[in-house]
Length: 197
Image 1 (cartoon, rainbow, N blue to C red):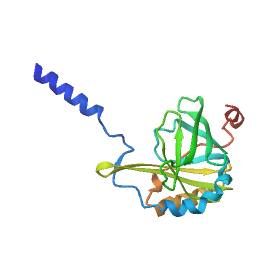
Image 2 (image 1 turned 90 degrees about the vertical axis):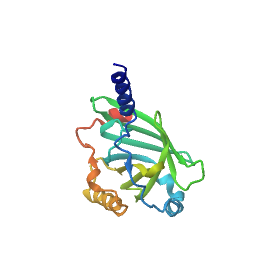
Image 3 (image 1 turned 120 degrees about the vertical axis):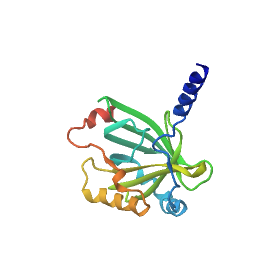
């Protein structure tokens, strides 16, 4: 009986230590973050304003499932971030966060939302007026990493050319475009109510 109880405890311990499905073997792709930083830093203020999430890879830290509206306010150093959308239960939900230069001097922005660990925030490509391709990747020990990718547009109903542009950018970094799920946007979204949250 003691052996069976011990075995059950071991199985439960192993199950509790399961690696999350967004942590995979391999390493983050090589991104010239310093080059992007030098190119974009003087333009950060242009990134402020309203964006609409059009597509996302699997991300357990993003509870909103549709109608995601992101508003960035630039303070001269970084951004205050307000993300509003509708979660899986159909409720309107708001999350607050900040985007700021990495405090360790690494040439990349960091994103830090309430209740979530801070992570890198890399603008792989943007024209500031229509689209932004955002990537966050973290390397772990023992050959594992996790990454999250987003496609934002200024319009809730953009031209598919902007979505394709970002998908091509991600593909150039070996981020498989089939991983993206489109985010529902458009006339069914209560944007006025989301803005008021």
